[in-house]
Image (cartoon, rainbow, N blue to C red; front, side, top):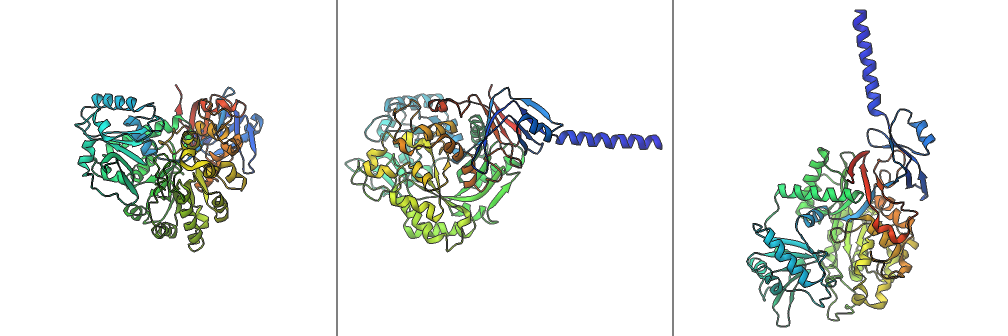
Length: 556
């Protein structure tokens, strides 16, 4: 009996030892680490410890961390740079995956290039009933107009084609797609949309904003198997570029179901802060139990709603107070009346959701600011941290209203460097002063949540940091920076992709910096972000991406 008790005691002690080993910290040694803290100070560290639950336990020097993690396993970082995982405050996860599985026209330099790419893609995919793609930009092509269905027919006429513009606010259809959608020369423009027509009134094949739904509703529905392939591709790309959390701007019931399933099975390799797309049927289903503040160890949340006030600048769908400088007959499109938009915002607010509204033009931004002014107090929803997504062209007098009402400007730095080839043509020399105006927002004390709007732009956050600091494109143009007075400092740009993006998702106590008690979401990069020339930031490569202390990407 004594022998049996001894064996039992030894077993218990061994079990406790095994449990202790499982719970021991992991320590990164010899790191060239940077993080911000709650005082907005940039802090250096050489060691970082995290436990088996994926939470940071200690940050500091080797001796400081060793004292707090005496029985840890150690990983030698060999002097490589370690940063908090970067947060994209505005992306479209499934849209990115679709772009990676469809025809990508984002690198085409001319209409001829695009038509050649369509023809080649059609030949390589003979069994696809619809050919779909994205990324074309008539401004890059220097076409001086939109492309036409007739031109697309020359590449492929016997199967329907649908190609979304780079901003997602216009689409290009061939004649077969127009026919299947029932679009004729007499089809009226839908509310919030426009069927582009030639001088004779004939539909040209370009559909702007809400008019895109005329084609989209006749396309085959995506199967769950296809959606899983799309999500897998997106997650792999997001991890590759060093994003550990993304605010998904437009989640539907199918997306929500997959996110929960992936989180349940350990397949969700990026944290997703979801915004329900609109307040219609999907919202009523998804909001039945109220906002989902956290799920599966903060891997998923669904506590915001995404709405749209207007279109985009490149397709002249953004709503302007005065006419476009380069098209005096147009002021763009507001998607809803003021009363309708306020009713939509109020519905989401009263359900407890953060309201995030896409607004590009100064009229779109004013409509939403007016709505917030009227509703935030009456709904007692100031704590929901409502946002305007893009806040791209704002009347100078309206910028202060963001701070006064307490609205977060959620902005995408690469939009400025992508749009600089046409933005001033669209709005003129005076209105451009309130466009992409990051410095003006920062100086009044607004917290900017930075993102990319992928797949409109690349998901690579270092492209965004580079654009924010230099106001230049990847080729270093313009040499002095485009309206360089609106640039951010490197520290500000770093903060807007970390702590301030986390704040915009109610997650600043969990994400955005490497501090004890927060999640061990971090990346290892191949350059020192804080000592390299600003002109080289966009060349930064990610070596490893970790989420909750688990490596989800390693560069081969």
